[in-house]
Length: 307
Image (tube, rainbow, N blue to C red; front, side, top):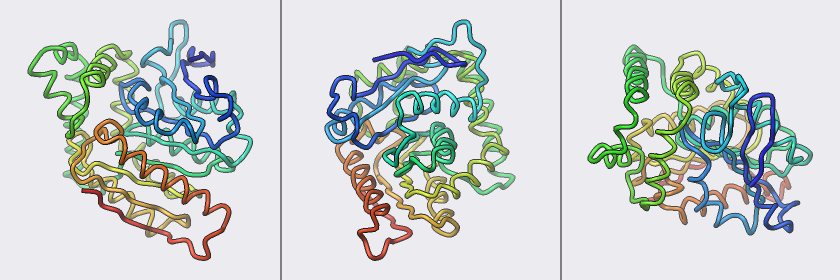
Protein backbone atom coordinates (compact mmCIF):
# COMPACT_ATOMS: atom_id res chain seq x y z
CA UNK A 1 0.00 0.00 0.00
CA UNK A 2 1.31 3.41 -1.01
CA UNK A 3 0.38 7.04 -1.56
CA UNK A 4 0.89 9.30 -4.55
CA UNK A 5 0.48 13.04 -4.15
CA UNK A 6 -1.18 14.60 -7.20
CA UNK A 7 -2.63 18.03 -7.92
CA UNK A 8 -6.00 16.66 -6.72
CA UNK A 9 -5.31 14.56 -3.66
CA UNK A 10 -3.05 12.26 -1.70
CA UNK A 11 -4.01 9.13 -3.60
CA UNK A 12 -4.02 5.77 -1.85
CA UNK A 13 -3.21 2.79 -4.06
CA UNK A 14 -2.17 -0.83 -3.90
CA UNK A 15 0.16 -2.45 -6.45
CA UNK A 16 0.67 -6.20 -6.16
CA UNK A 17 4.15 -5.79 -7.68
CA UNK A 18 5.21 -4.26 -4.36
CA UNK A 19 4.63 -7.59 -2.60
CA UNK A 20 5.66 -9.74 -5.56
CA UNK A 21 8.31 -8.05 -7.73
CA UNK A 22 8.18 -10.97 -10.17
CA UNK A 23 4.91 -9.51 -11.54
CA UNK A 24 6.52 -6.12 -12.29
CA UNK A 25 6.69 -6.74 -16.03
CA UNK A 26 3.56 -8.83 -16.39
CA UNK A 27 0.41 -7.39 -17.99
CA UNK A 28 -1.17 -4.91 -15.60
CA UNK A 29 -4.82 -4.48 -14.59
CA UNK A 30 -6.04 -1.12 -13.31
CA UNK A 31 -9.35 -1.34 -11.42
CA UNK A 32 -11.59 1.77 -11.46
CA UNK A 33 -14.21 1.84 -8.71
CA UNK A 34 -17.89 2.61 -8.78
CA UNK A 35 -19.78 5.35 -6.94
CA UNK A 36 -19.09 5.98 -3.23
CA UNK A 37 -16.96 2.89 -2.68
CA UNK A 38 -13.28 2.27 -2.01
CA UNK A 39 -11.08 -0.21 -3.82
CA UNK A 40 -11.45 -2.86 -1.09
CA UNK A 41 -14.23 -4.70 -2.93
CA UNK A 42 -11.82 -5.78 -5.67
CA UNK A 43 -9.67 -7.85 -3.28
CA UNK A 44 -11.32 -11.29 -3.86
CA UNK A 45 -10.85 -10.91 -7.63
CA UNK A 46 -7.31 -9.56 -7.25
CA UNK A 47 -6.36 -12.52 -5.06
CA UNK A 48 -7.28 -14.81 -7.99
CA UNK A 49 -5.47 -12.69 -10.59
CA UNK A 50 -2.31 -11.47 -8.89
CA UNK A 51 -0.15 -14.51 -9.72
CA UNK A 52 -0.53 -13.86 -13.45
CA UNK A 53 -1.08 -10.09 -13.57
CA UNK A 54 0.17 -6.93 -11.93
CA UNK A 55 -2.97 -5.65 -10.20
CA UNK A 56 -3.36 -1.97 -9.34
CA UNK A 57 -6.31 -0.64 -7.35
CA UNK A 58 -6.82 2.78 -5.79
CA UNK A 59 -9.31 4.91 -3.87
CA UNK A 60 -10.72 7.78 -5.91
CA UNK A 61 -10.90 11.30 -4.51
CA UNK A 62 -13.56 11.45 -1.81
CA UNK A 63 -13.47 7.75 -0.96
CA UNK A 64 -11.56 5.35 1.24
CA UNK A 65 -8.03 6.17 2.32
CA UNK A 66 -7.36 8.87 -0.27
CA UNK A 67 -7.16 12.31 1.34
CA UNK A 68 -8.43 15.51 -0.26
CA UNK A 69 -7.65 17.69 2.78
CA UNK A 70 -5.93 20.84 1.51
CA UNK A 71 -6.88 20.08 -2.09
CA UNK A 72 -9.79 21.30 -4.21
CA UNK A 73 -10.37 18.56 -6.80
CA UNK A 74 -13.06 18.95 -9.42
CA UNK A 75 -15.39 15.97 -9.31
CA UNK A 76 -15.83 15.29 -13.01
CA UNK A 77 -15.10 12.38 -15.33
CA UNK A 78 -12.04 14.21 -16.67
CA UNK A 79 -10.87 15.03 -13.14
CA UNK A 80 -11.14 11.43 -11.95
CA UNK A 81 -9.34 10.32 -15.13
CA UNK A 82 -6.57 12.83 -14.37
CA UNK A 83 -5.81 11.24 -11.00
CA UNK A 84 -5.94 7.71 -12.39
CA UNK A 85 -3.75 8.83 -15.28
CA UNK A 86 -1.21 10.25 -12.84
CA UNK A 87 -1.05 6.84 -11.16
CA UNK A 88 -0.73 4.99 -14.48
CA UNK A 89 2.17 7.22 -15.48
CA UNK A 90 3.79 7.10 -12.03
CA UNK A 91 3.88 3.29 -12.25
CA UNK A 92 5.08 3.33 -15.87
CA UNK A 93 2.03 1.43 -17.13
CA UNK A 94 1.75 3.71 -20.18
CA UNK A 95 5.02 2.64 -21.75
CA UNK A 96 4.06 -0.62 -23.49
CA UNK A 97 0.95 -2.46 -24.59
CA UNK A 98 0.44 -4.37 -21.35
CA UNK A 99 -2.50 -2.52 -19.81
CA UNK A 100 -5.99 -3.82 -19.04
CA UNK A 101 -8.47 -1.29 -17.62
CA UNK A 102 -11.61 -2.36 -15.75
CA UNK A 103 -14.31 0.15 -14.85
CA UNK A 104 -17.30 -0.70 -12.67
CA UNK A 105 -20.54 1.30 -12.61
CA UNK A 106 -19.65 5.02 -12.64
CA UNK A 107 -16.05 3.86 -12.95
CA UNK A 108 -16.91 2.61 -16.43
CA UNK A 109 -17.19 6.24 -17.57
CA UNK A 110 -13.79 7.08 -16.08
CA UNK A 111 -12.27 3.89 -17.49
CA UNK A 112 -13.52 4.78 -20.97
CA UNK A 113 -11.78 8.16 -20.77
CA UNK A 114 -8.57 6.42 -19.67
CA UNK A 115 -8.84 3.94 -22.55
CA UNK A 116 -8.80 6.83 -25.03
CA UNK A 117 -5.96 8.63 -23.29
CA UNK A 118 -3.77 5.53 -23.14
CA UNK A 119 -4.84 3.79 -26.31
CA UNK A 120 -1.25 2.91 -27.27
CA UNK A 121 -0.73 1.07 -23.97
CA UNK A 122 -4.16 -0.54 -23.82
CA UNK A 123 -4.57 -4.29 -24.27
CA UNK A 124 -8.24 -4.44 -23.32
CA UNK A 125 -11.08 -2.70 -21.58
CA UNK A 126 -13.82 -4.15 -19.38
CA UNK A 127 -16.97 -2.12 -18.79
CA UNK A 128 -18.94 -3.59 -15.91
CA UNK A 129 -22.53 -2.49 -15.19
CA UNK A 130 -22.20 0.86 -16.93
CA UNK A 131 -24.60 0.95 -19.85
CA UNK A 132 -26.11 3.43 -22.26
CA UNK A 133 -29.78 4.21 -22.73
CA UNK A 134 -31.91 5.52 -25.56
CA UNK A 135 -32.99 9.08 -24.84
CA UNK A 136 -36.75 9.17 -24.41
CA UNK A 137 -39.11 11.18 -22.17
CA UNK A 138 -39.42 8.05 -20.02
CA UNK A 139 -35.65 7.71 -19.48
CA UNK A 140 -35.33 11.45 -18.83
CA UNK A 141 -38.00 11.19 -16.15
CA UNK A 142 -36.23 8.18 -14.68
CA UNK A 143 -32.94 10.09 -14.51
CA UNK A 144 -34.64 13.01 -12.77
CA UNK A 145 -36.12 10.62 -10.22
CA UNK A 146 -32.72 9.00 -9.68
CA UNK A 147 -31.15 12.41 -9.15
CA UNK A 148 -33.69 13.18 -6.43
CA UNK A 149 -33.05 9.77 -4.86
CA UNK A 150 -29.33 10.52 -4.74
CA UNK A 151 -29.96 13.79 -2.90
CA UNK A 152 -32.23 12.13 -0.35
CA UNK A 153 -29.95 9.15 0.23
CA UNK A 154 -26.94 11.42 0.83
CA UNK A 155 -28.78 13.55 3.37
CA UNK A 156 -29.92 10.52 5.37
CA UNK A 157 -27.26 7.96 4.53
CA UNK A 158 -26.42 7.02 8.13
CA UNK A 159 -29.80 5.32 8.39
CA UNK A 160 -28.35 2.51 6.27
CA UNK A 161 -26.40 1.34 9.33
CA UNK A 162 -29.73 0.33 10.87
CA UNK A 163 -31.79 -2.77 10.07
CA UNK A 164 -33.85 -3.42 8.01
CA UNK A 165 -32.54 -0.55 5.85
CA UNK A 166 -29.03 -1.99 5.95
CA UNK A 167 -30.17 -5.30 4.47
CA UNK A 168 -32.34 -3.49 1.90
CA UNK A 169 -29.33 -1.42 0.79
CA UNK A 170 -27.14 -4.49 0.37
CA UNK A 171 -29.81 -6.46 -1.47
CA UNK A 172 -30.22 -3.61 -3.93
CA UNK A 173 -26.48 -3.78 -4.67
CA UNK A 174 -26.02 -7.56 -4.64
CA UNK A 175 -28.70 -9.99 -5.74
CA UNK A 176 -26.45 -12.94 -4.95
CA UNK A 177 -24.93 -13.63 -1.54
CA UNK A 178 -21.93 -11.65 -0.36
CA UNK A 179 -20.14 -12.13 2.94
CA UNK A 180 -20.68 -9.95 5.99
CA UNK A 181 -17.13 -8.61 5.59
CA UNK A 182 -17.98 -7.06 2.24
CA UNK A 183 -21.47 -6.02 3.26
CA UNK A 184 -19.83 -4.04 6.06
CA UNK A 185 -17.32 -2.54 3.62
CA UNK A 186 -20.05 -1.36 1.24
CA UNK A 187 -22.03 0.30 4.03
CA UNK A 188 -18.93 1.83 5.62
CA UNK A 189 -17.64 3.22 2.32
CA UNK A 190 -20.98 4.70 1.31
CA UNK A 191 -21.67 6.36 4.64
CA UNK A 192 -18.13 7.72 5.10
CA UNK A 193 -17.40 8.98 1.57
CA UNK A 194 -17.02 12.73 1.04
CA UNK A 195 -20.50 14.18 0.61
CA UNK A 196 -19.59 16.72 -2.08
CA UNK A 197 -17.72 14.12 -4.12
CA UNK A 198 -20.47 11.54 -3.78
CA UNK A 199 -23.18 14.02 -4.74
CA UNK A 200 -21.23 15.25 -7.76
CA UNK A 201 -20.45 11.75 -8.99
CA UNK A 202 -24.03 10.62 -8.53
CA UNK A 203 -25.28 13.51 -10.63
CA UNK A 204 -22.73 13.48 -13.47
CA UNK A 205 -23.35 9.74 -13.82
CA UNK A 206 -26.90 10.54 -14.94
CA UNK A 207 -26.23 13.84 -16.72
CA UNK A 208 -27.56 13.54 -20.31
CA UNK A 209 -24.57 15.31 -21.90
CA UNK A 210 -22.09 13.19 -19.92
CA UNK A 211 -23.95 10.06 -21.02
CA UNK A 212 -23.89 11.19 -24.67
CA UNK A 213 -20.15 11.77 -24.47
CA UNK A 214 -19.70 8.37 -22.82
CA UNK A 215 -21.63 6.71 -25.65
CA UNK A 216 -19.45 8.38 -28.27
CA UNK A 217 -16.25 7.57 -26.41
CA UNK A 218 -16.93 3.91 -25.73
CA UNK A 219 -17.41 3.32 -29.46
CA UNK A 220 -13.95 4.80 -30.11
CA UNK A 221 -12.06 2.32 -27.91
CA UNK A 222 -9.77 0.56 -30.36
CA UNK A 223 -8.87 -2.43 -28.18
CA UNK A 224 -11.17 -5.38 -27.41
CA UNK A 225 -13.97 -4.47 -25.00
CA UNK A 226 -15.77 -6.78 -22.59
CA UNK A 227 -19.26 -5.61 -21.59
CA UNK A 228 -20.14 -7.44 -18.40
CA UNK A 229 -23.40 -7.28 -16.45
CA UNK A 230 -25.49 -9.03 -13.83
CA UNK A 231 -28.94 -9.32 -15.36
CA UNK A 232 -30.57 -9.23 -11.90
CA UNK A 233 -28.98 -5.81 -11.18
CA UNK A 234 -31.37 -3.61 -9.16
CA UNK A 235 -29.00 -0.62 -9.05
CA UNK A 236 -28.50 0.16 -12.75
CA UNK A 237 -30.83 -1.34 -15.39
CA UNK A 238 -28.81 -4.17 -16.97
CA UNK A 239 -30.44 -3.55 -20.37
CA UNK A 240 -28.15 -0.53 -20.71
CA UNK A 241 -25.07 -2.75 -20.86
CA UNK A 242 -26.76 -4.94 -23.48
CA UNK A 243 -27.48 -1.77 -25.50
CA UNK A 244 -23.84 -0.77 -25.11
CA UNK A 245 -22.78 -4.12 -26.57
CA UNK A 246 -25.23 -3.85 -29.45
CA UNK A 247 -24.06 -0.31 -30.21
CA UNK A 248 -20.40 -1.27 -30.28
CA UNK A 249 -21.28 -4.37 -32.30
CA UNK A 250 -22.89 -2.14 -34.94
CA UNK A 251 -20.44 0.78 -34.95
CA UNK A 252 -17.04 -0.12 -33.46
CA UNK A 253 -14.13 -1.45 -35.48
CA UNK A 254 -12.64 -3.54 -32.65
CA UNK A 255 -14.08 -6.69 -31.06
CA UNK A 256 -16.72 -6.56 -28.34
CA UNK A 257 -17.86 -9.37 -26.07
CA UNK A 258 -20.94 -9.41 -23.84
CA UNK A 259 -21.08 -11.59 -20.72
CA UNK A 260 -24.45 -11.73 -18.96
CA UNK A 261 -24.59 -13.27 -15.48
CA UNK A 262 -28.27 -14.09 -15.48
CA UNK A 263 -28.77 -14.40 -11.71
CA UNK A 264 -26.26 -11.87 -10.35
CA UNK A 265 -26.66 -8.21 -9.44
CA UNK A 266 -24.49 -5.09 -9.39
CA UNK A 267 -21.47 -6.73 -7.74
CA UNK A 268 -20.57 -9.90 -9.66
CA UNK A 269 -16.96 -9.60 -8.50
CA UNK A 270 -18.27 -10.40 -5.00
CA UNK A 271 -21.38 -12.44 -5.77
CA UNK A 272 -19.55 -15.07 -7.86
CA UNK A 273 -15.85 -14.28 -7.84
CA UNK A 274 -14.63 -17.50 -9.55
CA UNK A 275 -16.86 -17.17 -12.60
CA UNK A 276 -16.30 -13.43 -12.84
CA UNK A 277 -12.52 -13.91 -12.83
CA UNK A 278 -12.81 -16.76 -15.32
CA UNK A 279 -14.51 -14.43 -17.80
CA UNK A 280 -11.91 -11.72 -17.22
CA UNK A 281 -9.11 -14.17 -17.98
CA UNK A 282 -10.82 -15.28 -21.18
CA UNK A 283 -11.11 -11.66 -22.24
CA UNK A 284 -7.49 -10.90 -21.42
CA UNK A 285 -6.33 -13.98 -23.34
CA UNK A 286 -8.46 -12.96 -26.32
CA UNK A 287 -6.91 -9.47 -26.26
CA UNK A 288 -3.38 -10.92 -26.24
CA UNK A 289 -4.22 -13.02 -29.30
CA UNK A 290 -5.90 -10.05 -30.97
CA UNK A 291 -2.69 -8.03 -30.85
CA UNK A 292 -0.42 -10.94 -31.67
CA UNK A 293 -2.72 -11.74 -34.61
CA UNK A 294 -2.39 -15.48 -33.98
CA UNK A 295 -6.05 -15.98 -34.90
CA UNK A 296 -6.72 -15.97 -38.65
CA UNK A 297 -10.16 -14.45 -38.08
CA UNK A 298 -11.13 -12.38 -35.05
CA UNK A 299 -14.87 -12.30 -34.29
CA UNK A 300 -16.05 -8.72 -33.85
CA UNK A 301 -18.82 -9.62 -31.40
CA UNK A 302 -19.75 -12.45 -29.06
CA UNK A 303 -22.54 -12.84 -26.50
CA UNK A 304 -22.28 -15.24 -23.55
CA UNK A 305 -25.04 -15.93 -21.03
CA UNK A 306 -24.05 -17.56 -17.73
CA UNK A 307 -26.81 -19.08 -15.62
